[in-house]
View 1: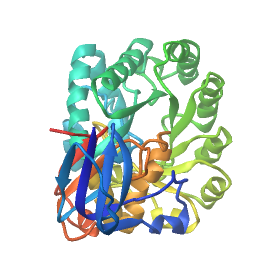
View 2: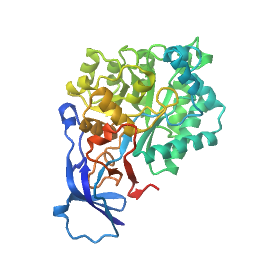
View 3: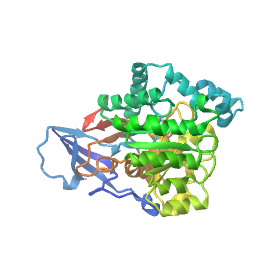
View 4: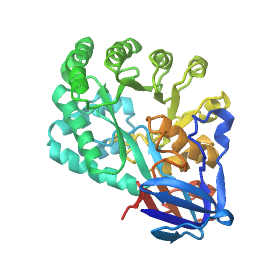
Amino acid sequence: MKILFTHIKELLQTRDNPTPILKGQAMKTLPSIKNAYLLIEDQKISQFGSMDSLPELEVDKKVELSGKMVLPTWCDSHTHLVYAGNREQEFIDRINGLSYEEIAQKGGGILNSAKTLENTSEDALFEQSLKRLEAVSHQGTAAIEIKSGYGLSLEGELKMLRVIQRLKKHSNVTIKSTFLGAHAVPLQYKDNQTAYIDYIIQHILPEVVSQQLAEYIDVFCEKGYFSVNDMERILEAATAKGLTPKVHVNQFNAIGGIASAVKYNALTVDHLEVIEKEDIIALQNSDTLAVALPLCSFFLGIPYTPARELINAGLPLVLASDYNPGSSPSGNMNQVVSTACIKMKLSPEEAINAATINAAHAMGVSATHGSITPGKMANFIVTKSVPSYGYLAYDFGNINIDTVYINGQALS
């Protein structure tokens, strides 16, 4: 089926060919065409251009978009969307003065979510997660990475990863799966963390790989969670079995995790609220992408990733939501882009690039997502009538989306 969209006020992120990762100053450039047309055919982008150059085309349907803009759908490369229940009481605890670390020490945080998940059936977990996935797709996300990490046992982790596989089958959203068994240390291993790492490597990891439940491996490398040596043990075992690292590092402390992740050819290092000079040097000498999670900083009241410092160092930057029940209970990528502009001082161009092209690279879907390019999937957002694309970031808290198209079909 051929669908022609005409009189688009501005067609954003137009790239004739697949685009490599955008680094440093290149992130400031957002190519676009004003008064444009877009042709999609059989779920893919076929061609685009200015209305002045629109050729005679035989199509099945025409859609007039005067006053509206079109841009690629968001790619969210870091989420914990599969979880049970919520952690609203911890939100109140933080208002009353407890820190994220103090809540975790009381048995809250990740361990709280693990307990709730243990008492939730796989079907119930799927239904809760599917609702969240449908919500973020209507907010413009068409590719998403989802981590395990609230199971913290063979049964719990596999349950989460099976739910992710079920979501793949029930949704048009492109989904990537990450095994995050090393998210926290379960209470039964509190006095023997090494034994839990052995358990991950010897018992959970082989099942994850044999059942083909994940593409990526993650570790929460942070004081009070897993050390650099712990992370290296897990990455060594996981990469030997074909999983690619995408790791949590530098959220509260810089403990050398970035250089270690680079050593293991990590696709991404995520969080980076705390950055040291040696961390930037390590990233400059690698192909590893820096992923910032501004909604986590907003929700917890912690520092934001120093995005300007990273970009000025010539590095690529990715934006993601960190959607999870404890530190970022939102998967709204529109709010991610706005927050990055408001709090991290990104330009709208940099923020859109970070949430589309670079984000697609950060989850291995750059061949099909992230830009308006012939041959890529017809995944795009049609805005409401807005004055400019800068307005999308400026008008924070409001959804300026008219329609989301995934695989050439409008979401109802």
